[in-house]
Image (spheres, rainbow, N blue to C red):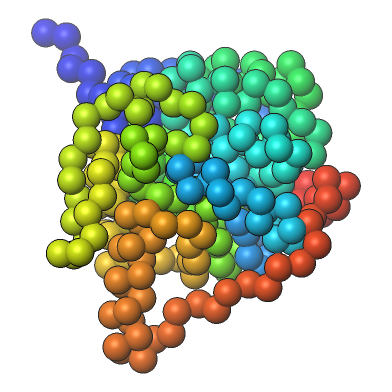
Length: 278
């Protein structure tokens, strides 16, 4: 009787495909991401609709920037070059998000990623470091594996902690639709996915795809066990509403919300070489 292939919600494909991708990634002999300590604050940029009106802050935030999936293209098209670009999805179509790698960015593909993603990076000579997601389906035991939720956004929070950052300012982390859009950039497949109503309280309702609903559940569970780093949101949405509610409860327990980071001149492309050791 054939073995049943389980579709893994984290990477959008079945376990066999993920294992094959990991095997192919290991054959490339890439350097692996190594843990760091004490490197301050990072801006993590997702692709939620709010990024369309908050991205300008990133030009002057003075922080290292970690762009997730299509946020990489969105930012570089506006002359904002991320310090890091991160991807985890195992499907071949994800390669389009890194269609034009640049010399200013360090690319951090998960070993789960399709070989076409690595081909794009290799062909361009992009600076690259490999990391592994903990999923319990056969990842190498002698590697550092990053836990977290079902989306790259949730994993990126833990990834930032492993990289030594103590706080993350989150851009485009909406976790819901806005004006029928799921992203700040074109994502027709996601835009036409079924939606469900999600209530944070009796006054706040959000329209969410199934993946967004799962992410909200992951985020709630992460809050229950405690975040590995401090967080601050830019823009509105379901995830920031969940966070604000948790912060309100913490204030009642005399545990203050993390303070905002002052803005400073933009970290120029020439100023990111100190991160080469990643």
